[in-house]
Length: 191
Image 1 (cartoon, one colour):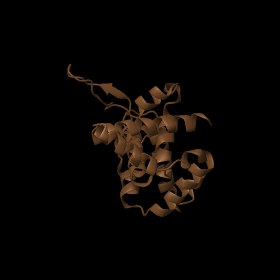
Image 2 (image 1 turned 180 degrees about the horizontal axis):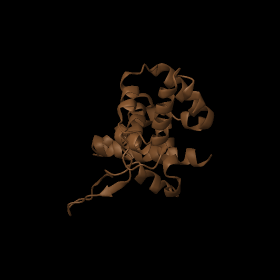
Image 3 (image 1 turned 90 degrees about the vertical axis):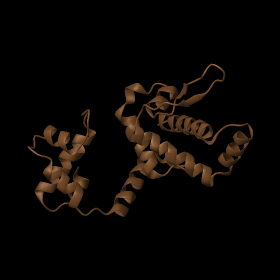
Image 4 (image 1 turned 90 degrees about the horizontal axis):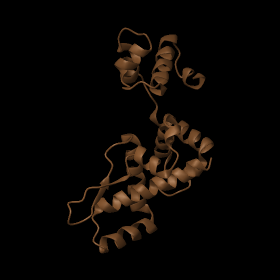
């Protein structure tokens, strides 16, 4: 917290930031300004809303700090193509919130909402992605897959090969998300 506190000259914003960060890290079922303000013992969420809405934030500085933290603690996550500091941090945060639930790559994929679920009609077998799980982690995997589709020749070759096999774009992206989740699981579990 001391790294964050130095960014604010006055005591009140420091306390609000501390309460906001601790509230976000807590086990509250809903994490919004109202529930965090109640959790912190404040009558209204006005102070936190003011902090988030009107305070000046240097997004570039925050991105640099986040990249530095990820490089320091999880450098292996930044090695594969398509995984940037923001996606890596999102996946690590989700994993850190639920370490007891992550005993296999299947549970890791289910927590991120990329485990396959069968939805067959009887004539043909089809699979779709699990709509449950952490939506932010699923979004991070989505960004990883689309970055790989754009910049990684191996992923583009895989995409073209699966298109020729008759798969739809949605099915291919589902398979790529599951592959990315498997890769991230093994990279993080090796720590």
